[in-house]
Length: 447
Image (tube, rainbow, N blue to C red; front, side, top):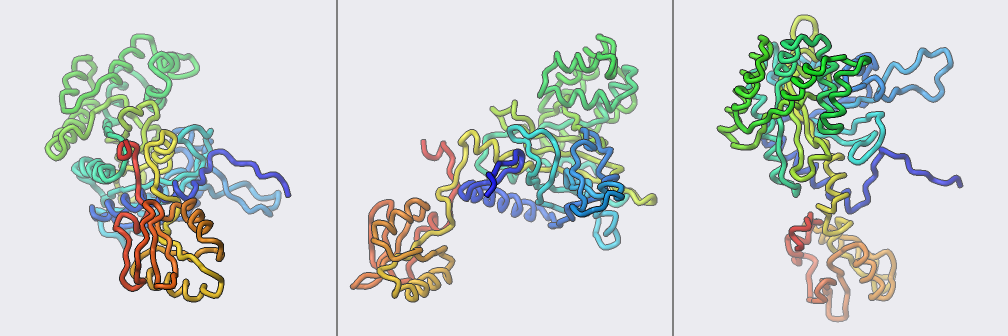
């Protein structure tokens, strides 16, 4: 048998971590549904031409799909695995527009694939959880306030560190750059979007490089001055005005972001931070953009991001503008696991192990297990009729809290953590509520 080698960038959680992941997905899904979002699922592949040209080196990151037995005459992969959920969702809206009620509120939790260099929190295959609201011809700005409130609701129910949601409007840097006379706005946006990762000195080098935008040094300084502005209210407007740059697109962006900050502070003061360095690398964003950081883990980057897109979905007659946010579930969990910030209380859903005196009792044990399962208690029967001490050790290794015994005086159940053993009836006995299913622990709970 050939040696098995791991493939980097394709995470596979052990059972204990998978329990945590399932908990996170359940909470996120339930929260999205509480806010009226309907679930959809899209196919894993899209035409390569639709996936490409979305910015952020998307062309290089797309995994092409073709049959292994395809002939040499084939022109190459016409299909690619989707690298996010927004592009396939836009196609889904166009194909089903006649069957959808607008504004359409959807959530989508699926795997996506991205051919980038694996590193901490960045994978080639990972899970995203998206919400989007799409309009028919128009979409009011108040939805741009609503989406971060939904994300904050979901995160408040999860065992994660404090977080901040940073928000910007791409019209602000675009208008500012145009006011400075910059022509290649998209290139500058992509460079500035890397500011947290590579720092201001490297950004300046890229902005002034002759094989890049080639900006004059003073212009590059102005670009960085804009990126340094942040505020928890609409006071950022005056800070931008003080830089002395004028452009109508800038004025419109400032007005829209100020309205969002004011409205958000009415609902959840301090939730949003206007951060004018946020740009997002994908080219389909046209207005408000979001990024979310865990406080104390800022160097890790964003674990939840998105924005407004006005022209991604259009059939030539009608445009379907939308706004969405995506939680990088795999990315978030990778950080929590690597820092030891969260774990499950056991590695199996099983709450009770039914022990065996001998193999002749397996039928009775299966009936006991069935009676407990009918009342929602996860149960398994011991794999073999070994000594009780060995069966208890098996349960302990799995994290199963209770072992069920058949004794001469009747059935009994033992809490192997405390050693307490009491008579029990499979028709009525129930473990404590916190033991029925695996729980989620954080270091703070155990300190």
